[in-house]
Image 1 (cartoon, helix red, strand yellow):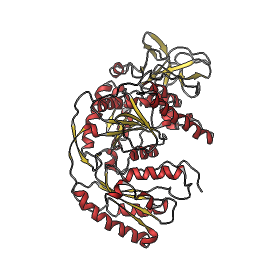
Image 2: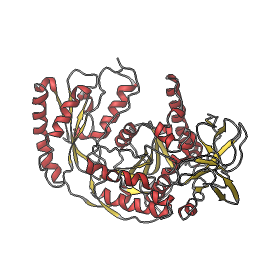
Image 3: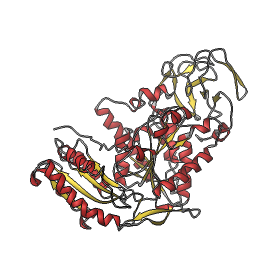
Image 4: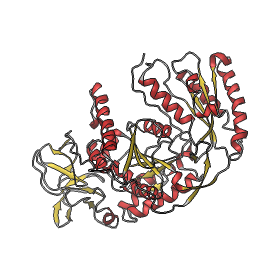
Length: 512
């Protein structure tokens, strides 16, 4: 198991952390200097060269071509002989893309039922049965040509006092909607925009178009929000230009605000929380502290009947075999692998590789390649059964643990999760990503205490206390769970207080 040894690590005062007995590397908890002698599980190792905090130290010699293990899993092969005590990173560890060996479930696993009653939170019960954690009016641009008008509408409310119970008027500007093919690319954009306008955190929406774009606003009037009178559409060309459209939108929003203010938070089982999971600016500590702690929170939420949604297909590559093992049946496992294969084909068209994913910041933080990154990333989802796998921006209908096919690029991944219906997002970071979403609270969890202290205004939870030996994975997981319940009930997150509201749909096709 990836998490073996983590509880012990939480109370360790050692300078390095060996995450699994099979590992031939350890992770430096603090910077290591040449000449330092360490004892790790009976092995005495002398540090040969500087090893930054979060980076890997060889515990035993590894011959050229030999495997290097972290979390008990192979993360690559030695590009040359590596001596015990050496720094192991991009200069001497080779990424190797291998054919996956998968252990499919022999028979369908029993559907997990809530094992205990959970706490209650205060949410907005919507007509379709879903529950919102916020109460927004959304202003959505159908295309780039209407993006500025959408921003102007939302900005016009910045100095106004909104009725109690209304969280705000949120804009969804973006750069798509025209100059695109009318096949899969347009369908994906439509699904994304439809998901964010017909969302449990959105009471009503206004969709703005120029009037002549590929993504016509009429395409959205089959949506449930339109049928219930909670969606109106305007175009700049028919309304008289930008300023006239802003005024027309404000008139429509004025009607919605009064109705939205009549909505009331009601006591709701925590099982109605649909928690989206994401990580960005990951470092080597992410897979040791923040991600396992979030995983513990997710296991707790699933136990009481809630839903957790793991995303980022590019960041399960090399660890997908661990998720296949947990799939409730062969069909779900094959669906997951189908998303991995189709994503690889997508990358191949541009001569790309999954290993292009680790950013310079990821590598500076100690992550050498995508396999190492993915092995730490999947820990966010805990240990429960994988109930379903869905495509980007597809409505989430299963309870329990679900996977969504998204890129690893943070704002695009969050847009897909939001369109799928998550009502809270938990976001782990090692380097310190600054991101939010227009209508969904985003809980930011720092993997190390230095980032938490440096970016305190952006962070909600310090999971770095695990590596510091001040808390266990279970304790921080419970802290995240308790914060989740409060946030779902209305407590503001750091990203909300600062005003982060990033929104970027996934563009997959050519520009026309």
